Length: 262
Length: 125
Image 1 (spheres, helix red, strand yellow):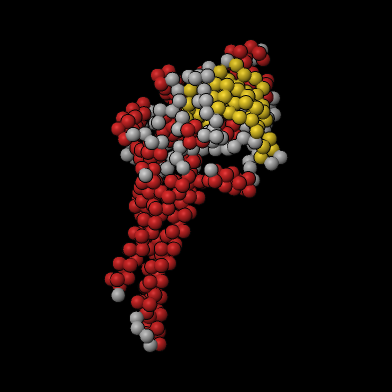
Image 2 (cartoon, each protein chain N blue to C red):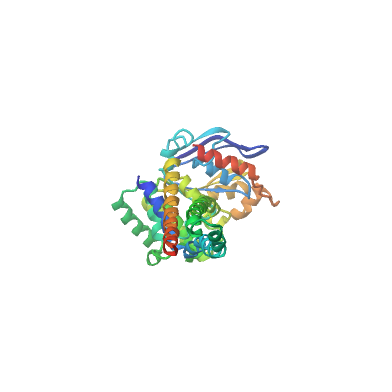
């Protein structure tokens, strides 16, 4: 369903992603783990057509994101690391807007919005502006939105960041449920090892833009002889703290220019 | 077409819901009309030619339109700051349609604002 071959992304001197290769099967829940600045978000941005790789290639549902960005975009849903809802609009309006952007026919849209809002327990609050929502509610709404156009793939970039244990638990239960019932392939990143262990079929641990280990949670633990995934993770990536280097303003402008010129 | 419409609708809804923006954006034209109008009006009239209000009203309306347009352009930066821009950028929709939808939305808001100031001027005259 997702395939990356020798993906490389450089930002000037910095090599954010350094020759990544991996494959995700259809219907799988695949977790991408790594310290801050390891290249997780950059990889997702390349797979989701937001960034062009410096070299290497990828396939999303058999299509090349560089060559056919519109076809690829219609096939995935995404929850970004940072919120991306319009907080002035209501929950329903946010979903409606998304449905129109993704060309979901009106009748399907109305049903699908109702199903998803009920599943994520937001139906009663559908006409409240999103700015009145709690962090967990916003997150749930974003996931509901990502699934509105029945994508084959769902990208979740640290979806549980800043949520309380209750919300996290509920969120993963719902994601798992959708994976079971709709067969949606999930590509997620997180810093919470227990979550990865709980939901992921397969895990790849990435550091300095390279995959250092991949396999099932059990396999990773066996490989490192650690008793928990957290220890396995630390054994593989070391215990030093990383500085996340953000791009300079000029870099950001260049990225924006590239996005708009497409 | 539906894409352009929904983005237009979003701009208009956001405008109609933010009362402070509506009121604040009327403040400046009114300041020019009322304060300068009544302050400078008599001077202008003594200098000899017609009504000062009639003289400044078109300029004030034009300026109001200009400022409102600029503000709706800033909306793009806000969207970037609050992340909503990314939602539109990963959608399977040409960038041109996104831009046209937003621009038409901004133009509509500007026209509403311009009409309000025009009405105020008309009443004042």
